[in-house]
Length: 111
Image: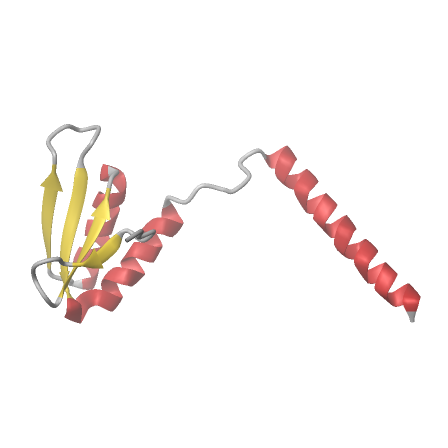
């Protein structure tokens, strides 16, 4: 099965969820958020090679919602802009506003 999220039910321990991160900075931030919320967790680092490390956090089902909120905060902090070049982003905004304006003008002129 294809999973686009970075968390899943623990395969062998019912009542636990596993959150996985491939970057150390993201996992450190997630761990800090869990500590601030008082969430109990187990941390396992899979693979000693620094370039292929996988950080796995085991979270109890009772703290699932807090962990999900922390996961969203990690995603928000480390997200990249869809269009990173500011000039291209400005052109896309101008074109979109122009198309919407033309659609509104066309709709209003028919009545």
